[in-house]
Image (cartoon, rainbow, N blue to C red; front, top):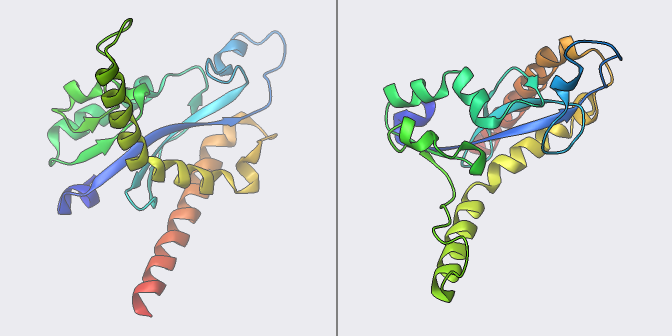
Length: 188
């Protein structure tokens, strides 16, 4: 947050799911890992990148049934943003409602005002706003893709208890790689 707030930079936040093995039959929390989005057993991590797609933060994993906004609240992101310097954090629709909690620092896609029988001008304007927001936050998707390119995260078949450490280690390696590449290109 200090990195983004120092120069008034924007950040982009999103959650990602990584498939894991299904818990054994008879375990009490077996359904906890089933993602409502993909209907698969997964763990979820929250990623924060800058506008260039460089990874700044990767959270510990949570079970796949956890919503994005819930994970952000449990990590204390709303409080951290509300108390910190002003910066813009772009987010997807999974974080709607967080903008009010953070004093407008979290920007989500626009709400639809008309559910039915919307005027043609409104549909066109809403689509333009939605596409503009999406094109600004595409870099976080690229950052997540770089993270998932690592074989250890393509589909994890090991123990779920170690997944948090693995995700954060890969994110650290990726961040170091991106920073080293940035430093090398500035010198040449």
